[in-house]
Image 1 (cartoon, rainbow, N blue to C red):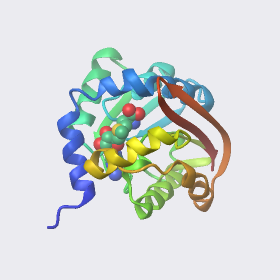
Image 2 (cartoon, protein in one colour; image 1 turned 60 degrees about the horizontal axis):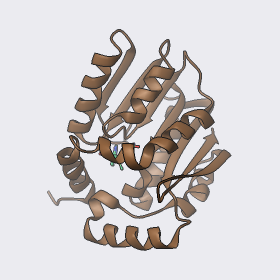
Image 3 (cartoon, rainbow, N blue to C red; image 1 turned 90 degrees about the vertical axis):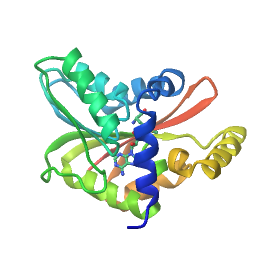
Length: 213
Ligand SMILES: C[S@@+](CC[C@H](N)C(=O)[O-])C[C@H]1O[C@@H](n2cnc3c(N)ncnc32)[C@H](O)[C@@H]1O
């Protein structure tokens, strides 16, 4: 079988599972916090996070949704296992689970979730896979359910230049910036944008977008 970019992405994130929390600490935690605030989720909901990575946002969601049910998925088995182990330890008895699943084929029934989160995932998917993933997310959301996305911002020239270099050197890890194209992809997936904000952490720009089914 040919090795695809998705296989390479799985492999690279599998290897980085142990050190990945540092990137949240330095670059992502502020956007995670803002995403939670903007999502409007409340305790007792059914929440899905797609692409949990090493689980920093996922832990935030479980903490916020103690009486609800919080499910996580990630392409990398090591990331998913790490996230699951930590959650079991920190939140014993919580209704939660994190599994290795490809976002392009979500193993959940239609309309099952009140809210879906995906932070820094779309950069790693081809345009076709973004469409497929958006359509899966829409399918598993209930009517009027909310999608919260965090994307890497494209509003800083120097950062964009560095990102392009990173993307050429290690495409399976960095992917490419897609922020400016995502709003139209959300609308093409038949969802309505309800909020957006740019967040900086040191020099790193993120854009938080919320949308409704
Ligand atoms: C840049 S990290 C972001 C992790 C986390 N969401 C965060 O905010 O720090 C991207 C994650 O997406 C996962 N990923 C990439 N492609 C995926 C796919 N097709 N399905 C599910 N997860 C995927 C990777 O394994 C990795 O853990």
